[in-house]
Length: 251
Length: 281
Image (spheres, rainbow over the protein chains, first blue to last red):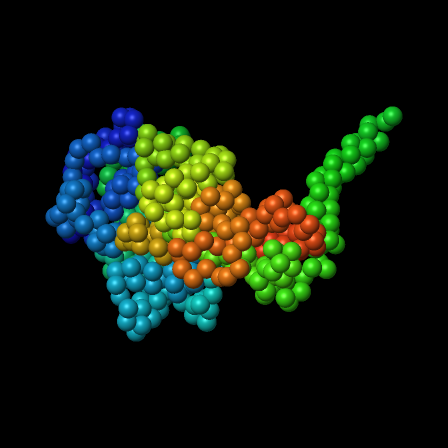
C-alpha cells in the first residue's frame, strides 16, 4: 500500500536555482525507503518537504504534488501543525531540547494539549522501548537529556518522534555522528519500527542504504535516477550511473 | 637584547597596563568609602534631611531612587523584551527592521540631558503628568529601552536555531517554541541586560532633573504624580547648591548610590555565572 505518492515534484531555491527536478515516486507503508546518493542531490530537501519543514528554509515548491493518504500536503490550506504530528523527523545531529529526558519525550504531546499524566507516562515508556533506550534511562528520566551519550541522544530523538504516535518517520542521516555499536542499535530499532510505521531514511553511507532498505531511490544532482526494491538496486541496478555509484566508482 | 627578554618585557608592560585599568575604580571606591563611611548610620539611612539638608538622613532620596528604578522597570522591561522578541524571532530582514535597528542604536547614543528635555516637553507638559515620579520613570524608560532591547535580542539569538527547528518539527507553533524553549534559555541573558539598563537609569541625573526630581522634599512620594528626591540629583544638590555642607554627607550619599548600583551589578554577574554553569548547549 502506498502511504505517500510524490507526483512531478520540482523544487527550487529562493534565488531560482533548481534543487529537485520532476521527481515522481511512491513510498510504501510499513517499509523502509532510503533516499541515497552523493551530497547535493536533493535527498534532504525532499525529506524536509514531506513534513513541510522546508517552509523554514529558502526552498520553494515550483510544481508538483505530495499526497499523504491521498491528500496533497503542499496545499496552502494544509494544517502543517497536524501534518508534523503525523510525519515525525529525526535529524543528522541529535538535538535534544534543553529539558529533562522525560521533558523531551512529552514535549510534542504537551504542545498538542495532552495533560493527563498517565497518558504522558505511557508515551514515555512506550517510545523509549521502541527506540531501545528504556533499559538505559528508566531510572533517570528526570535528568537533563544533555547528560546522555551521543548514541543515546539520537535514540532519544527517535523516541521523541515516536512519542507523538506519528504515521511516518523521516530520518536524515540519523547515524552520521554515531559509533558502529550505536548505529547498529538504531538500525535494529528501525527494523522493528517498520512493522508499525512508514520509514523514509537518508542513510549516511551506501552500505547503510544497502543494509537497511526495502526500497531505494538513487538521487543525483536533483534527479531521481533509479527507484525500486533495495535488493534490485544494490545487486542488479538497471542504470549505469546507479551501478557506478553503488560500486564506488564515484561519490 | 635577546628575543626572549624582549618577549618578557613586552608581557610585563601589557600586564601593567591591564592592571592600570583596575586602579581608577579601586581608588574611587576606596576614596568614597574612606570619606563616606563615617557618615553612614541608621539615622542617615532612615531619617529625613534636616537643617537645610546639612544634617539628618537621606531616606527620601533612597526611596525615590528605588521607586524610579521600579517605575522604569515597569515600563521598559515588558516593552523592551517584546520588541526584542519581535526583532529576533518574527521580523524579516527588510528596510523596516533595518530602520528599527538604526533607531535603537541612535537612541542609545543620545545624551541623557536631551532625554530630560524631551521628557519635560512630552510627559510633564504635553501629557500633563507634571514633575512627577511617573514623568521621570517614563523618561528613564525611553533611555533604558535600547539597552534592554539590544541585550535581549542578543540573548534570544544566542539560543541555537536547531532547538527552534526541532520544536517546530514536533508540531509546535512559533509562539509555543518561543514561550517554552527560546525564552527560558535566553532569560539569564535578558535579565542581565535588564539589570544593566536599570542600573544606568538609577544613576542618571539629567533625565530626571526636569521631569521628576525634587530639590528638597522631606517626605516620601505618595502617588506616581508626586515629585521625589533621588540619590544622584540629591548628590548634585548638596555638592554644589548648598553652602557650608558637611562633606561626610556628600560622600555618604555617594557611597549609598554606588552601593545601590554596584549591588545591582553584582546580582547581574551572579545570574550570568549561574546560567553559564547550568547551560545545556
